Amino acid sequence: MTMITATTMAVLLKPMITAHRLLLFQTQKHTSIIAKQQKQHGSLLVASSVRQSDNYCQNLVDEFDPNIPIEKALTPPSSWYTDPSFFDFELHRVFYKGWQAVGYTEQIKNPRDFFTGRLGNVEFLVCRDDDGKIHAFHNVCRHHASLVASGNGQKSCFVCPYHGWTYGLDGALLKATRITGIQNFDVNEFGLKPLNVATWGPFVLLNLDKEILPQQEADNTVGSEWLGSCSEYLAANGVDSSLSYLCRRVYDIECNWKVFCDNYLDGGYHVPYAHKGLASGLKLNSYSTKTYEKVSIQSCDGGSTESEDDIDRLGSKALYAFIYPNFMINRYGPWMDTNLVLPLGPRKCQVIFDYFIEAHLKVLSRHMPACVLRGYGMINIVLSFISKLKDEGWFFLFYF
Ligand code: FES
Image (cartoon, rainbow, N blue to C red):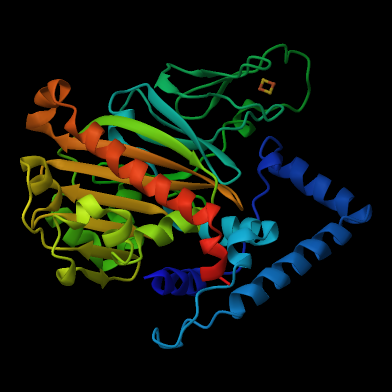
């Protein structure tokens, strides 16, 4: 399955449209003036070095041939996992393209709910306004680029903590402090910069490179664009908005984000050795992986189990879906957990585990936090396995 991940990635890497986050606080007019000045003062040299870096990274991608039959193929070169310029290239080509899972509808269930986050170098803010409409913005003040909000919670407006500019939940600039007497300042030009946002099932998604779409249109198209033909399969197999959100655990891990994904996607190769307990409850010779355009679904029949909990986790309805490029959905029994792998650097990522349960069991789960315990067990196994590989240099043997 490592080859399938890499193949998908090589196919989906496309030419970059650069969006310079720090220019977000300028108007279009200012941006074009600055662009002209930069041209006059030799910023063409910078553009040229960016192009060189892009060419270098594109050559690294081209070294990998996704058409070689898997029996004869090699893994991608180790530079894909370690080179800082490749990491930056990857942010633009993989994460700033297409729909990306960033959160859950329960985080913005009520008017005035909001949450913030970061995808690559892009700070974002998602909220629900008083009319129930969902908005997403670059979390960048249009004055001097401070973060406008942090964390999550409820707000009736966003007041920038630096100089107090105030924005409505629809992103409009409501108040710019001590602006009296400043000429040619139009508040309508300084609203927060919007991002495309959509929901699918219990998930909230952003798309950084698409023209802003009306909410209904975005919600109607996101399923096929994000999940391809697998959208209906997931919806029919219990990945839906009827689930109740339970809790979150966040882990920073010292490895490239793809290492975590590769581990998830190795088709059960590591299970008999790294997860002996889990393996004893599985019929490993029934392990199978089905791939779709952007989704891979792994399944395995359960064997004899000692507890009812195991039956839930390993039962015939268990479904483990990987969604390109960094999102995993594990649906088993009444539970669902998701793993979102955020790239933090060439050798660092953050993994966010979120836990859901069927709504009628949520009250019971307060007294029986089995999913948390189960989650801890699973997380610890994955983390210790990654740590073991790293300590023993296995990554670099494998990825030559
Ligand atoms: S940076 Fe936000 S008000 Fe100045």
